[in-house]
Amino acid sequence: MDHVTDVAKRFAGGAQYIDGRPRTGGSGDTHSVVDPATGRTVWTYATAGPADVDAAVAAAKAALPGWAATAPGERSAALHRLSAALDARADELARAETLQCGKPIKLSTEFDVPGTVDNAAFFAGAARHLEGKAAGEYSPDHTSYVRREPVGVIGSIAPWNYPLQMAGWKILPAVAAGNTIVLKPSELTPLTALMFAEAATEAAIPDGVLNIVTGTGQGPGEHLVTHPDVAMTSFTGSTAVGTRIARLTAGTVKRLHLELGGKAPFVVFDDADLDAAVHGAVAAALINSGQDCTAATRAYVQRPLYDAFVSAVADLMATVRLGDPADPATDLGPLISFAHRDRVAAVVERARTYATVVTGGAAPGDGLAAGAYYRPTLLTGAPQHSEALQQEIFGPVLAVLPFDSDDQGLAYANDTPYGLAASAWTRDVYRAGRAAREITAGCVWINDHIPIVSEMPHGGTKSSGFGKDMSTYSFEEYTQVKHVMFDNTAVARKDWHRTVFGDR
Ligand code: NAD
Image (cartoon, rainbow, N blue to C red; front, side):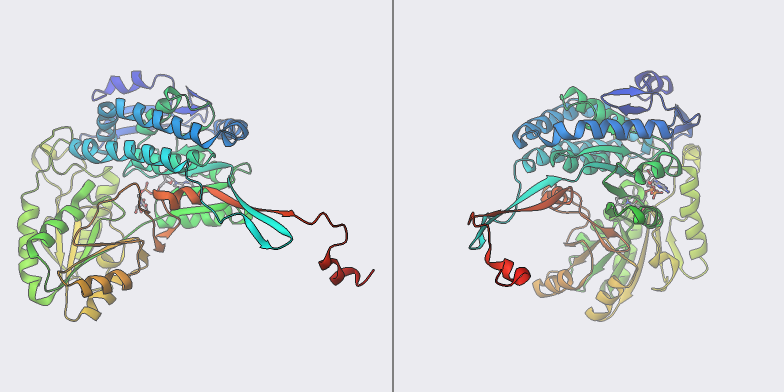
């Protein structure tokens, strides 16, 4: 997998996975997977055209009645087999993820792959755990019960930052709930989604239940989300594209699930464990080169700890080892592409006019110049309403601002368009409780920042979107509730008919 020719050979069947088998895309266009650590093209593939998307949706539609009618226990067994099949390819998945994203192999190995294996096992359990109101006589003359049914064919779009995990977050709850799905991964990172689909076939998940189409957002992406046979669009990506998809699908009244951008605050109160906050901030700002929607991007530090925090964060950032992502000793790989690295660099260059770059603020030279690397960067002095504190940068850049009162720190935390995740650092249980209540976000960590678990929901509010991934909340997003009401009286002239017929 780590040599150019291996990838073309490995995916010789083509970059589309439709109805249980790979095939070549028919758009007439190609796209390339580029190793961002070296700039080498590792695979050029034919992208999906409209006919491929139509075929994938048709396969999902044909598979739907059979899969939806499968007993929950059978779907659960299939997902347990899928979890095992993913685990059996753990090494190959980790290497492919690192190759296409540039993320350090230790992150792929210790986070991306085991997280996805665990997610599959979790949704195997969730498949058998359909919840609803108790059946009963809510009117004395009737028995009511609730059915929880699949939504239909799901059209999903995923980003490049965690391609395997995002594929899992989209596919697993949908399939566990009895839906069928067509997923389009990012055109930059199709490899592990294709391997996920192969694992599903190996796990004897029926053909057509899970289909992958690959190519650009404007091409197969828009065709998929607007397809009339797609009942629900589930999207993870930027707020700009999410709002476009909301507009494109508005006329069809499809169900929408939008996991969008973030700008997570990291609030350090003056009684916090400084060492814990410093290590937490550097880890949470730099994980996946800062290309994490929940990454710590703006640290608000109460005045008494501010100077010590800034100097310790700068020192720790300087120790982070940039390098070959395939090397287990590497802490920080490149960004996803040169274009993205240049966008991050441009934000930092603009910030120089209103802020101080304490450390970083440049691409490394030496042996790393051929990759899309950017040094860990610490900014101070950026005003709350500046670009650096308001807009998602999606790179290894942390801005720090001091605050005085608790009110001010919490107000800063809430003062962006986003609401995905946040953390508060304090040893005072009342401060922690207040932060948990008052910060508007889908997740608030106390004295940590980043960890996720399959059992708990992930998803935002405000411009970070709506809908949950992971957990039984996400499983419910992929079901619809039907009320069934039985008459118990067997009486032809029912009492309530008086309201229409009078006494006749
Ligand atoms: P992006 O929005 O540019 O692309 C995401 C996906 O949408 C890709 O597959 C792309 O091909 C597709 N796409 C683009 N235009 C489209 C269109 N018009 N119609 C249909 N599909 C289209 O995002 P990205 O750069 O790949 O990923 C980074 C973004 O994802 C960041 O904003 C990050 O915060 C966000 N993200 C959010 C979460 C979350 O859970 N909230 C998780 C991961 C990433």
